[in-house]
Image (cartoon, rainbow, N blue to C red; front, side):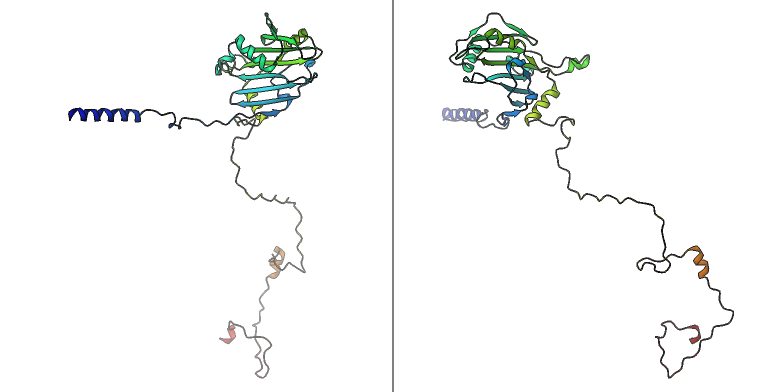
Length: 309
C-alpha cells in the first residue's frame, strides 16, 4: 500500500513538472510579428553608391529597408544583352548589427556568390586586391559569353559615416558600414578596364538623416523629426472655416433728413435737441367740448386727460 502511494506521488510530481515547463509552441506573447520586407523603386538620385561614367547611367534603383538598415540594388545598362543584369548591390547597416559588416567573406562564400551571379562562367579570383576610396576590394574576372569580359567584385567598408563632425559630435555619431557587390559584363571592355571601373566606385556618406531620407524615398519611413514629417499623426478635427472679416473702410456718415431708414432709430443732432424743446404757452390750454350729435373722428384716448378727471 505504501509503495502504491509513493508511486502515485512520483507520477503526480513528474506530470506537474512537465506542465510547468515552457512550451515554445504555446508561448506566443514574446513573438513579434514582422511583415516581409518589400522592394520599392526609388529615383536614381537616391543611389547610395555609383560607378564612373564609363559604366553608363543608372537605370533603376531597387530598395528595401528596415530601421537602421537599407539595401539597394543599382541597375546599369547591359549593352551585350547577355543573361543577367549589371548590378551594384549595397547593404548599409551599423557594424554591430551583423558580423558580415566587420569581417571579409570566406573563399567558399565568394565562390557560391560568383556561381549564383555568373552561372557557367570561368571566373578567376585575383590574388592581389584592388583599391578605391573606400579601401581594398576583392574581385574575380573572366571572359564574357560571346566577347568582352565580366567582373564580380566584393568590398566591406567598416565606416561610411559622415566625417565632417568634430569633438563630441564625432564621438556620439552613429556609425554605418557597407557591404558592396558588383556584377558587371561588357561586350567590348577588357578585364583591366572593368577593374579600373571598380576602382572608381564612390559611396555616399551616411548619417541618421541620410537613412531617414532613403527610407522616406522608399515610402516606409517613420516620422522621427519635424523636418521630414509633421509631429502629429492624427488628423485635426473638421472645423468650419471662418469667413474672412470684411475690410473696414472709414467713410463719412451721411444722415438723410427727409427719408430716414425705417429699420433704424433716428438720432437727433445736438442742434435738433435744442430746437425740439418747445416753450410752454403762458395761457392755459382749453379743450372745446365735443358735440353730442357728431361722432368723433378718432377713438377716445386710453388714458383720461386731466380735464376729464
